Image 1: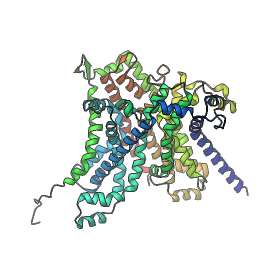
Image 2: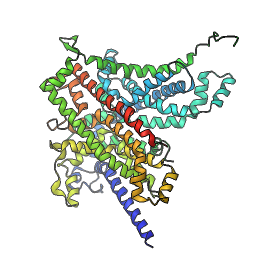
Image 3: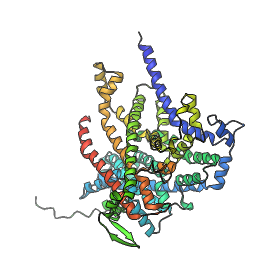
Image 4: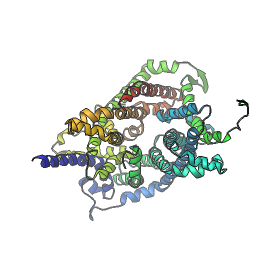
Length: 279
Length: 309
């Protein structure tokens, strides 16, 4: 007879725990966004209350937009991320098609060679990468970043895409070949459209570390013209440490694009992370 | 049987074309620089002349008191950084995943989305957010702690030598927790229905079911998470650089291998950057990561096979 109350109590405990941790997860971010819209006095006197008509102020944003070129940083990040994703997906799909479709000598070796990069971080080669970029005059160019991130993303992309390439029906490809299509047409016209969902998953996966990286922009492209939003935020805040309005506004500007993208793609991302266990 | 296979198949150039771009980029920007970095660690430079010193740089790194002290400090801090991740992130991640996988839970998708959110943000943003929140100047944390009656426990955690590393590690755990949570959640969801039903028939339900049935089955996922965390922790840099600076203050209390490598390579204050000592540190990091990954792949993962369905 006490089954239902116990069940209800359990549910309440589960929701209490999850809700509590949700608060821990989002409160810090909310606090920053909220306070970025307040004047200095309100930031310090009532940090926990949302902006009201009396405390509302955009002074931080005015400083940021006047002093830092956030629009340009944002654009740089966009170019680097989209450029890298394009090459990761194109080259990754081509390589994984070759590795799964054809039998040839060295197939297994190349697969293992690429898999090595999944576990070994590319950062360990930074010293030689910088030397190479300096020699070829690519320091302080967005292209240098795109190259590095493409190399960084390829191993995992090949790994994931190979799994999906195997599921494409052989009959379809062979039908295309009987009709006289070349291997290139078979790949680009028949196979590629079929693995689009997998490509989307790989894109979302690969995007996060590229967009958020500080190490390579700091070392390979620190010039004003090539700063990404992550590096731009870091440098800007370093200069304006004492201007709380500006710091809070810069943080909000920097985290908003990632947050918006996440909210749009979260379902796909989580499905990818959990390998389809979540529908 | 009549014609032996001396009819040569046409060379399949398309295979090379498909493979070439990926292999070219990967080899030039990842494999060659890595090998080159390992090679540079065997050289030194004086008056712009590069000369071979064998393991001389490693002897300096481990033997010269000035280098050895900084190196062991960074390595031990890194181990502590990793240990805190393992001790906090795994239990909390498992607990959250277990809660999320409670059957017929309302608002599951919303919980999932919000709990994973911090993982998406950059270390730069995270580092500054927590630096502000923990700052005694702003006073958000003291006032929150006052509300639950713990105000006396507050301290400038990021600024004190004995608490800074713990504080930074916990910030990193806060951000990273989404990954273990999701991977374990997926592992929990993939446990076959029959296994759970069989357990229920035997009267193993609720918390006991979790400990006796589910936990052993998700051990492979925990193993994978541990090695992923290890690799991430042993080349971490961004968070410490942002919240504590390149000097990993206070007094190098939060210095880990990533920040030590950065300072050695680029120089700081009066010390000039040293490419070859930088390469030496990168090589040591590479060997540490490689040996742990190899141990995981060859020893741990093989033993765990037997739990698979």
